[in-house]
Image (cartoon, helix red, strand yellow):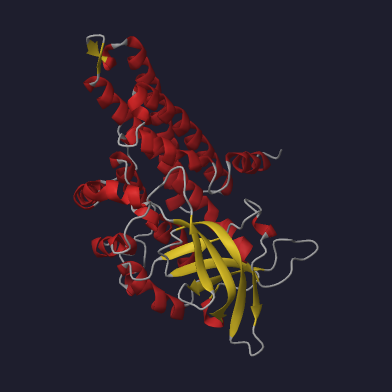
Length: 385
């Protein structure tokens, strides 16, 4: 079916991104994969291409396009080529919405130029060892100094995407004790300079998938954070996190759909090229039925993400809507990619084949951004259950 979610401007952008990926990423991606990280200077190329400035308002030098669809196209094209832009996915996808909604004019003037150029890469640090999805249970603290000029940050975070290369990290920390009737109260957002004394990047985590995305542990020992770098109102950070979760979950749903679509394309091509018992694997009825079923599943996921993207751009995507999209698309993608890998036989288990990388990369989609179980809780609550 013809998609209606994109117009000609979107498709022109897609062509540019596709050419860029072919020229700048595909030839060197095996090197990134082996190193387990994309080079820091690659982000300057993304800045030059204008990707980081799409949603930044024009008065700060950006394109001022208030739509998620361009980021979705980037995701689709990366999946199509079975590559990634490293850990930069959170820079605009997750961090920019917080700055747009909460940053002061002075903060925007300071951070937006470097954000667009790639000179200031952002990450966000929520999860802590031992807390997982229970963000209200975080133990990282930020206590005010005696003279009121800064906060003193202590604690640790884990699973921080982009944490190795980040120049600024939005850190969630307790600035006040929780209330008896509200354990979410007292969390604030601080934009921490990674060059600060006491800030340490711990281990770069060795992950099953997303190998080129730098994911790190972060440690803070008496890190001084100027009061000018607090984002939004004090003690209200948990509510801010909740406001941006629908977009994060939409992004995960789009990524899962795009990976599933790419898997079907890889499997279709492989089975046409691979000969078994004197004929192409694609000639067997089982292959045809498997790929047909996968194609139908991908079409259903496409309808879900397209509807969710339209709702997001109208500012109508609810937490339950986003949770449902993430739950459905990540489950579909897991099933489709597994079946497509099976059609590759033993070669599907070899990393030089893109289906193997998709298989490993996709698994985390049912965990990060809230587990599938958490998504079911959100949906059930919305149903009045």
